[in-house]
Image: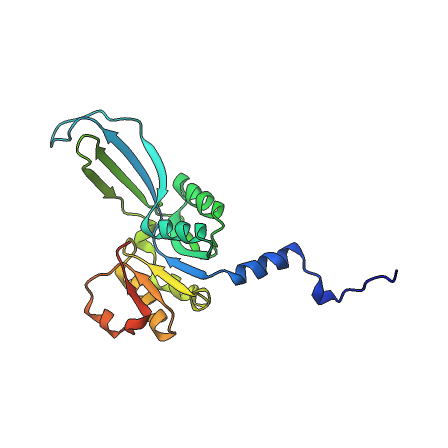
Length: 208
């Protein structure tokens, strides 16, 4: 039997196959915040000036932007996350969790002199009341220049998602870039008169 000859272009390495599969997936870029969520459930009602003892502290990965990125990745999309984290333990946790979801972190910037996003949550078990405080963090330093540095990534997206745990000027930079290049954008609705300049068919207003 004669040997079968393959052209080089017909032979795909595992890496080439992975790239082909990635190209076949919807491409989603999320520009937003990551938070390490620290949560304590408390049986005793919380009263001003009174100390209470709660259950064990639980730590979860969170943040509106990161949650959207993880949800999109688990839905089968090729996802990239644009944001920032600090050089601390929670930053390492963010990298591990997001990378574990196969999210592209090429534009997830380390900021050495600030802390990774952190939220403190207290839940009254008897009433379901939820008290939440978000700390000043790297999320507050996600700047328009970071969006511009990821311009090529954004322009390749089938959908861009952003939210307001990062500065509004940065979200506005994302909105303008998407409007200029007719890229669908999903963002939490907020009262900025200038949003009317966006092409309405390209803007999806939703609470996230």
